[in-house]
Image 1 (spheres, rainbow, N blue to C red):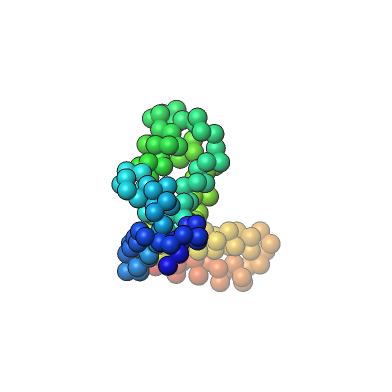
Image 2 (image 1 turned 135 degrees about the horizontal axis):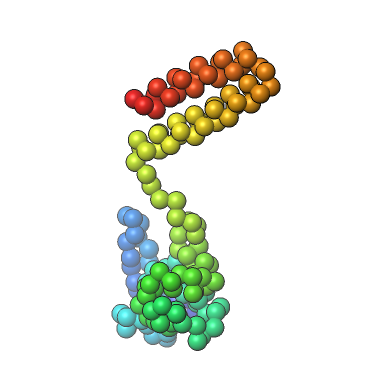
Length: 163
């Protein structure tokens, strides 16, 4: 079996990782495994290897002397540990991190989750605000029948929101 990185030499190191119930395997030759730091657990980021065969190289696009002004972390520190030192590191290393995070995750914006009741309340609030604006427009344009319908819808939604 050939090495997944250089695709030239015979693989002698076999790594397996299970993420979210899915097994991912990486086969490396001796030289690529040493280059990736497989023998040194502090210098090897299996996730980087699996998600782009060295995705941390995206961090090389910035200058080598770049250092976080708050915690003093460098790109070398990030590559060794696979973690950033503080929240300011995200701004300091943003150029390289954007590409790296995009390959590791579905995107670069965290949408988060919210409880179902909160989402429903928020949906009602937005709908109520939209109806209020439509009602004001209908009144200003002297469309009183439409305004009456909108008023009734608004009252119904407001009673739902309070329940």
